[in-house]
Image (tube, rainbow, N blue to C red; front, top):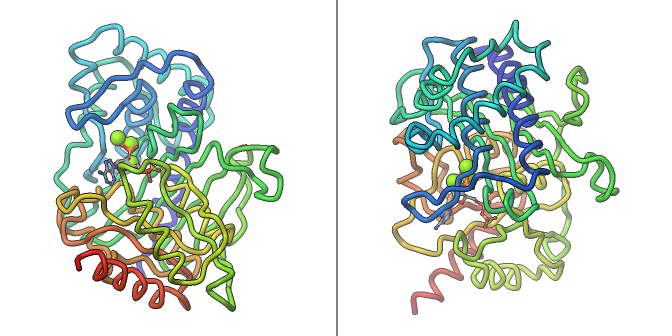
Length: 343
Ligand SMILES: Nc1ncnc2c1ncn2[C@@H]1O[C@H](COP(=O)(O)OS(=O)(=O)O)[C@@H](OP(=O)(O)O)[C@H]1O
Ligand SMILES: [Mg+2]
Ligand SMILES: [Mg+2]
Ligand SMILES: [Mg+2]
């Protein structure tokens, strides 16, 4: 079996440094938000985190390709925004100087812009390609809710390792108002672990999904934004499965983290439009974490996610993630709901 220990470590360091930056913006008043062509928001923290993570990956693995969500077009055109991002990037590097031997530094704004634009790869089925979402759940980030920094390595179209930083999830789910910030990391075949973001030297605790004896006791996660997934169909599926617990609504791949750590059991993401293609960076690391923690992740038809066909999951529709022993039953309920909705 191939060994991706170093890739997993570098992914953790890269995400750790990026979380320093995003956390600072999260708690500041000015987020420097821009609206993109598809009407979705992007902030100075998204750009800064993309620069830091790509800088780290490029320093450690200069031959690798990267599929990142953002590009530097706006920053090249707007000096104020560019300067704000550079200030953030500089101070995050300063504050994590102990990481610079492993993941390098960024010397100036030109290098920062070039690194951000290294995320333009088209993806595909050949070679080593990293999938990066510098801030997943930007709407949650702006609302003051959940968001995640997500990085995964794919080799020949298959996700092999990665790290997922969730700076606003509680370290102990039983103490929701206690310390915030967790880091999950994963390597295919070797499991997934979780640790506090504040303990970089901790080896982490292995993640295991909850085993549930009866579906009626299960609880499910879904997104916050009704424009991203169909809340009404998700509610109908839960009812059909006999689930009475209210859904856990949460932005970003924090949903994958939440089921992987056994706080909920199912993640449903039913498409709201027939033509939306899920992005690989929205699912790459989270899906591997759930699989390694004992879950199954598929699309709404039960098909495995195909990360080998470009920047999007164009061969799949929606997401159904659940503990292995209930996944099939959940997919059946999804299929019944979809058939019903076509009648
Ligand atoms: N129409 C539509 N359907 C499905 N998904 C979409 C859609 N539009 C956007 N996006 C992507 O949703 C990503 C955020 O997902 P979330 O799980 O956080 O959604 S939710 O806000 O909690 O509902 C979000 O990721 P970020 O842009 O990184 O925040 C988008 O890639
Ligand atoms: Mg976005
Ligand atoms: Mg995203
Ligand atoms: Mg994003």
